[in-house]
Image (cartoon, rainbow, N blue to C red; front, side):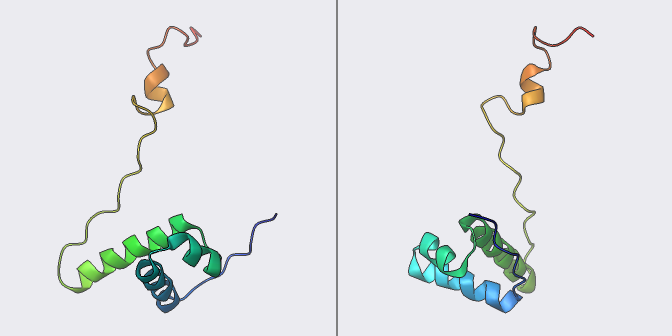
Length: 88
């Protein structure tokens, strides 16, 4: 199965998809019907919330920071002081 071609959607189309996903309560089905991934729908939802806060005069929150993987952070942090590190 190949990748689907990218579709540029208007802000109005994105908003309708987000509303449909929220109202139906079934994000997976909504995403399948529109040919998008759930992560894209949630990104559109977050962007809509940020825009709404800014439009209402409130402070828009900064975008969320990516989650670290593992208990000790990045690969470099875990192995920086490791005895397995090359001596060269």
